[in-house]
Structures are given as structure tokens and as C-alpha cells.
Amino acid sequence: MSDTRLNAVLILQEILEKKAFYSDARQRFKISEQDNAFVNMLILSSLRHLVYTKKVIKQFAKKKLPPKAALAHYALILGTTEILYLQTPDYAVINSYVEITKKALDKYVSGFVNAVLRKICTAKEQFITQDKGEFFPPEFRKLLNLSYGSKTTSKIERAAIKEPLLDLSVKQNPEELAQKLKAEILPTNTLRLQNSGNVASLYGYKKGLWWVQDFSSALPVKLLPPLTGAKILDLCAAPGGKTAQLLNLGGQVTAVDVSDVRLERLQENMQRLNLSPQNVICADALSFIDKISKGDYDIIVLDAPCSATGTLRRHPEIVHIKTLQDVEQASKFQTELLNKASQKLSSKGMLLYCTCSLSHFEGELQITTFLQNNHDFHIVKPLLPSELSELITTEGFVRILPYHLPKFGGADGFFTALLQKD
Picture (cartoon, one colour):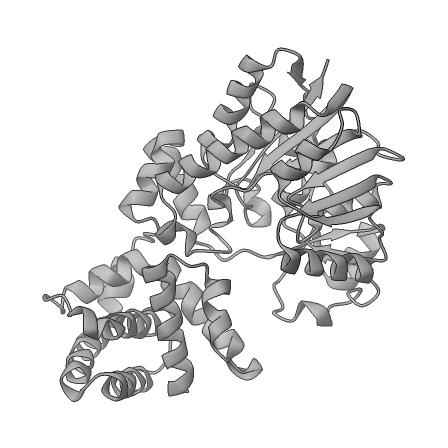
């Protein structure tokens, strides 16, 4: 287990020092199937509670460790996480992280780790009681405050720290599948169930009856009119959740993505689901748009590359690695994509724009500016079940925040605007 914990320490170090996504950071390490669940729980818990655990550690580690001993800092974070949140026996935590730092560094640093963890264990109940559920570091809080203000940002924080459930989009018969999977049916027929860990073992996976897709990600396509026979361009399509929806509704879909690796995954997903896009093309979205003619597509779906801040429930590293600079950079690219894609639509053509970002710069302000500069487009008012009316903004956009759908366990952050050319 010490080797498993050492891998977890090194993964956490890569995430926080290199601003890497967890899924990317862990690819370099061989983690057995047996240890996979433990590592996931440990890393994700440490990221959700990082703001508070750092404060706890600081009470006993007054001096900052030198750069060459940085590994010990991450060992302390994971050790504190296990002590306060994972109910691991104190002696097992202390012995494991002391051994790791002794082997990787020296006996003096391991002695320091030993002393700090022992003191945290002694005051464990006090620290658990004093935990106020802090999740957002100052920079990320500042980023959200620009869009929502402190009160709403705090509501987002309280909802986002909770681990999300598993959502599925279904090809048909949601009621029958919900019964088989013991799932709840959300207002738009997304199924929600406990995250079992091994998705491929669930009923209907091998038969291609459903695919994993969060409620928020699935909602944009459900705003479109009937799609039978419609020619649709799905830009930035991989891994294919919206492509599957569009095909399942009868659209003729060309799926484009810049990543050949992600497109391989899309094609594997389509094969399992027995769905067939007209074309699957590996290309940069801007370059591809330049090559197509006006009127080639009835609908363009632009699930634009973004800061991904709305996925913070599933990817808690987001709050520690994303900055306002990331939002601004993504926003510029979105503007260029929007302007180019909109020029290729024929009269009455529709542009479905969405991002998994919480920032207004990548959502409300992006589309408001676009409409101010493109008077030949108008917003198509979304038609949603009455239970989801709070998601519709006064402008006619759809804005989902983590604290929405509370009785179902919350949602990923998302923004959607459906536009039509006059």
C-alpha cells in the first residue's frame, strides 16, 4: 500500500505544480485495478478539502519545506486527508507517509512528517468539528465573484463539494431502464444512479442501450426542434455524448474534433451504441469551418472549448488549476469560433452554443456580445419542463449551477444558448 500512496503523492504533486488534470496526471503511473478506487477516493477527497487541510497542516508546520523536499508537503496533505475524511486508522496513515518520505527524502524530513501527522491525529475530532466545508481557494472564488457575487458563489461552493452521482442518456425506454438500473428519472429523461465504479458492468452497457452523460451536458441538444433528416455539424464533438444524442434523434451528423485519440473514443462509443455518423473528421474546428460552404448544415452544434469550471464536482482539481487568465483565453477562442460558424448557416439555420463553464465571460456575455454584433440572429426561447424553469434566464439562455436540481443531488455547471438566423 505504501507504493500506492507514493503514486498518489506524486500524482497530487503533478496536478498542483503542473496545473494538470487528474486524468492526465495519473496516466504516467501504473495503478492496479485493486488500488484504483482507493487512489481515486484519496486524490479527489484531498482536492475537495485542500483549502482546509492546508490550514490544519500550517498550524504545526510553521516553516515552509525547501523545494527539494516538496514531496513531503504533498504527503502531509494526503495523510491529513486520510486522518480527517477517510477514517483510515491513525497508525496506518502515520507509518505509511513516514516510510514514503524516509525512502524518497531522508530521516529528518520523515521525522518532521511523523511529528505533524501525530499532532493532527491528537486533535482530529476538533479539526473535524471546525471544518466549515471550504472548497474554493481565493483566486477561484474571485473568478466566480466576477459573475455571481459572493452570496451565489458561496451557494455554488456548498453544492459543488459534494461528490456527484452517475448520469446516463438513454436511446429509448427510460422508464424500463430506470427500473432495471434502480435509477431516478430526471425531468428530461436523464437517468441518475449511484456511481458503481465499474460502468461497463451495469445492465445495458454491452447492448448499447445508454451512454454516460451528465444531465447538464445532455440538456442543450434537447432544446433543438425535431431533427429527422437534418444536416448537423457537431464541432468539438469528442468523446461523443452530443453526437450520440443527435444521431439517436435522427440527425445526419458530421462530427469534428482536433484530437485523434478522443475521436477514437467517439468511434468506439458509436460502435457500442450502434449509431453511425455520416462523417467523423479529425481537424481543427476553425480550419474545418473555413473549408465548408454557407448552407452546408441546417444546425451547427458548438460545444466550445472552455475553462471547464462547471465540471468542478467531478474534477475538483479545476478550482486549484484554473484562473481568470484561462477564462479570458478560452473566451477569445470561443468568439472566433462563434463568428466563423455563424457565417456558414443558411437562412433559418440554428446555432447551438454551449460551454461547461461557470463564467459569464464564456456564456452570457459571450452571446450577448455576439447578438449585439450580429443582428440577423435571435434567441430561440427554450422549452423545458416546469420543474426546470429556474434554469432559464431573463434573456432566454439556459444557465445551470451546481445547486440546481437539489432534490436529485445537484448538477454540473453549464451554459446554453440556441440561436437562429433570420
